[in-house]
Length: 477
Ligand SMILES: *Cc1c(COP(=O)(O)O)cnc(C)c1O
Image (cartoon, rainbow, N blue to C red; front, side):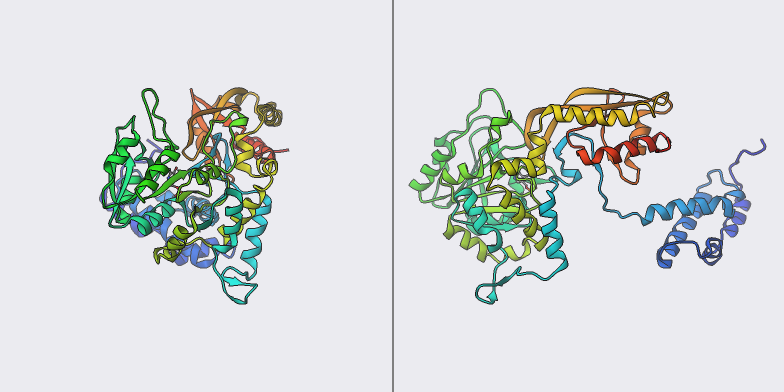
């Protein structure tokens, strides 16, 4: 049939392979237009021609026309444009998951961003004590803030909470036993599991109790001459309900003191403010854990704290001093950008109202549903008329999630903008939005595309409306 491609016989495979343009010929086709480094252009040309070669050899339908300048140049332009975009890009989070691990967890307030830019652009006193003129320690830059905010005697900050747990166990319990409840052997996403981290630290894990219930006497019976520590892990990302019981932290502390042992809590999310007045589940705050008398507590910087990725280690001075001296610490250390962001965030916590308003993670978690509703209405006004005949557009009350493994059972009342394309599938819409220059990430439910307006910032609405119109090839006025 005319115009239709046929499977090519082997003789023409040879012809086709010979007809593939050389890189230099391809460069001539492009001329001087390509606004990209030559080296990258050549890499992409080679890659394209390689793919064409593979297509020919695969025996799939292929015609000589496919090797013409007219077919290859547009293909190349698209690939080059794609290649010139940074790999690491910002996206619009329409998932409603506030602490979205795959989308960068917490986002920072402007003040914290300014601090990051300053220390990036200029030299700083990262490890220089301005008072004495001698070498200083990077940890001291946030230690007093953490102590004042939580009542801890000393503090240290490392790369993330997984590193914090590893470092603490390695310092305090290597070659000795750590007693932990079977109900708390959690796995956090990305293969962080308490038993595995314990093994890496060289500590010997002693499991006690049952999945649903662990009692004080379970811990007591497990204590031997080899025991170094009682560990409590906050089960932040799952819930055991029904016939359950867990030992209170103060009880664990009392038991440990009686036997001259240490107590550690891995708090996971680590909140500095009690969010229960805002209708959120009561979580122990870092201050409460410190006051319960633990020797050391660890938590993440970028979960409920709302700061940059970091692992915070707080506790008794003598204990923290030992951890600071561990050479492993050097391998897990925090970088200067994180420190700058973290200091700015911590400052905000001295005024709780300010923290709740300015720290995006806290602001989004405690947001008035009316504000979210108005944001949805604003987006709707910008797209509804333009998309008529192309897409059904509406709003719907839904529930958002905190995310980051925190408060797993708790839904936050929210509002979504719903799209149902009329001329193509909802999966195609999802793909188009995800591939846009500013990718929009939402979710598909019941064959509709949903954008939860909680995690779409007010400042994102205009850009988001443009992305949506572009996905339907509607011109933006
Ligand atoms: C999230 C979490 C971790 C890991 O923290 P990262 O900062 O992601 O390394 C460890 N323990 C608990 C209980 C957690 O919730």
